[in-house]
Length: 346
Ligand code: SAH
Image (cartoon, rainbow, N blue to C red; front, side, top):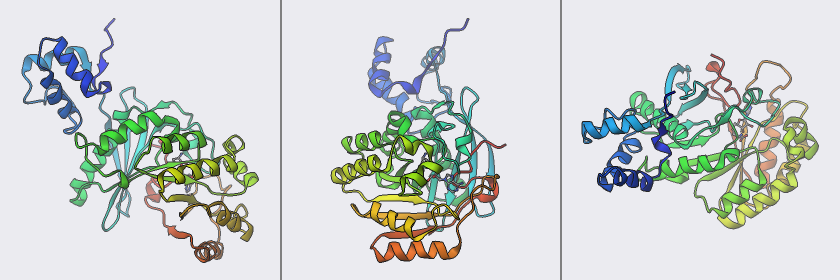
């Protein structure tokens, strides 16, 4: 049986330097290879042109580069691009490039499938298979950065962890990926341009606050009333709104960073004045922004987008209470690339 080769990108720079020393080479060689792996996002050892053939063969014999393959691209008529991302074990996730006039945003996945059970989300119907590694998250970002340069003549400007999976249930790997994305040895992006979205895992929100992370936090709230939230996001029975709110208060006290809430208004579920009043009440403790996102139907007809007058009521009530609110139109709906539609359909 062939011995399992190690994923070279699981090594830290220090470990890579030590590896070269153990091979009788210079530690500096580790820096060179590290730069190829991350900054230059090399797919193979062969392309590492300043490394001798002998060393490249030695690396080949010991390691693999488990680079993702972007197999297929779908382009929406609004410019949105959806990537099917094939992993080294043939599992598939999706990531999305969302262009606007001035920005390119990458929406990336953090897990294969999802273990949460939001009733309105297509990804929830896929079993959670595994967490993504830091390099698999990083590769999605690099792929979209390349596409942005190719099709829109500009680099990627923003990243949202709003693809498949719950990023706070793969926290360590998400954090390692963000370290690479923000490091000058990786993509050198500002953490302020990165948003991690969570359905609300209180313990991990506290951990993020303790870790003093510099990226932004978004919470998929959808209801500030426990019974209603539990009926559409059943894990809310375990992670209740009171726990979530306490964790968010802790987050705000430590980071002074505004919290964004994602919120879909559905007919007959959360479209009454009582619902919006509860929302106002829930987010009063810290500067907040509410993104009202359009519902993207996922085939079963159980959920319907609320009426325009219900949306207007939300907007007016929130604004009257000093809460920033935006109404978000969906992007990439025609290719199943919009929020909640990622389900490896192809
Ligand atoms: N698990 C994380 C990351 C996924 S983000 C989280 O829940 O935040 C995906 C976003 O799309 C979440 O805000 C989610 O609530 C929202 N969403 C899921 N299904 C949707 C749908 N059918 N239409 C619109 N938004 C949806």
